Length: 438
Ligand SMILES: Cc1cc2nc3c(=O)[nH]c(=O)nc-3n(C[C@H](O)[C@H](O)[C@H](O)COP(=O)(O)OP(=O)(O)OC[C@H]3O[C@@H](n4cnc5c(N)ncnc54)[C@H](O)[C@@H]3O)c2cc1C
Image 1 (cartoon, helix red, strand yellow):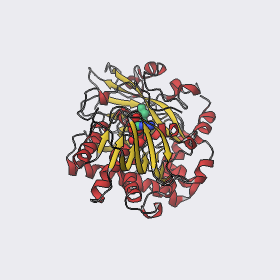
Image 2 (image 1 turned 30 degrees about the vertical axis):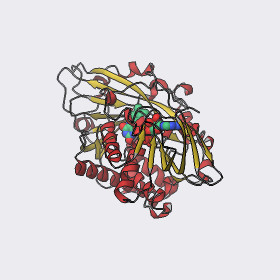
Image 3 (image 1 turned 90 degrees about the vertical axis):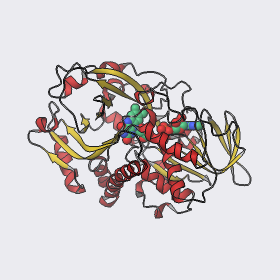
Image 4 (image 1 turned 120 degrees about the vertical axis):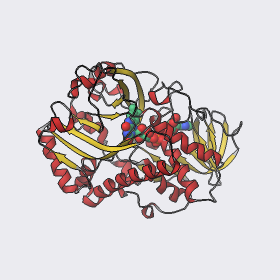
């Protein structure tokens, strides 16, 4: 299994260099640290933020990032902060019981509120916009399924439209749409802010430092062999998402690297104003997501139908060094094809990039102590949906790692807890793909 590719391509979000991109708090690695966090993305940034906020007497913290700061999935995603109050949560309710599904829906809504509060309190310059997310369905059976899920979930402010749907959504051939509170932001600016605060409070951050192996010492501590020497830690948090199995073999086929694409579309001509974010749900498997940026551009991700026929192109593939060629054609004329009134807009792709998501075998995040590995914790496997979960997940993680609380006392959704049983779950990622018969 792969470590991060040494030449990951850039993305729109990371075009302009940021001061912490190549930060090293000290010229050499410390020989020891109480807590080592492996990975320098949203998970790591949110975790140090909560530790520093809640535990003034926190242990020493070292963050090790293989490439530039925030250059993994977080630095190349779609910027969509979209809770899912009915669709995935509804599927979870069907499978695990209503209370478990509702817990996930409530958690994602609470996460959005908490992120907004943090950004406002800290005055973070990251283009946060809170608006309505609009899920568009194109088939009658999907509309019926959405209606059923909404009724079952009794989902907060989610609202379904089945009449004049094209006019309401602005999307051609729409048969139904569900809207609810959602947001969008500039992810790397948020994460760099978190690390700026953390570094100012003494957290040691080391970029371009790849962890290559982990070994348990006889005294119970962990030895991390890195590209720049060895560090000993009492506790280690794996904030490595797609790359977890490269260090922990038991995560092979548990957190699966999944190659994905996003692009930026610009519009030189006149086009209708978009204020919602969107998910265009063509099938359960095949959907695109879209955010309108305050600068008038659009970020779109998805395009699965263009490249997912070939399993090797995405499944277990951690190569983010170049564009997935098939997806270039997919986004040509995208806005003109799908949005009413955009026909003469001359909207076109301005930038396109690849990123690696960490898909969990059972499509649920994995949070908490790692079974049979005393002192090791995980927060990963976000399954392409980390933005509505990571911030509050990190609060619970801080309570476990530093506060010593058991998972059950953190208030995190029961389904997200890492357990030995989950390792035996069926591989839903492959199941969904084979059923889709792309
Ligand atoms: C193209 C794309 C679009 C997406 N769009 C959205 C979206 O719009 N909304 C949404 O909710 N989610 C989206 N996601 C998913 C979202 O980006 C992730 O869920 C989230 O960013 C995960 O954050 P993370 O910090 O756990 O992982 P990452 O950001 O990937 O961070 C993990 C870090 O660990 C480092 N690392 C790994 N192994 C090692 C090692 N051995 N040594 C040192 N460092 C290591 C990596 O270099 C990386 O920087 C998208 C993902 C992609 C790829």
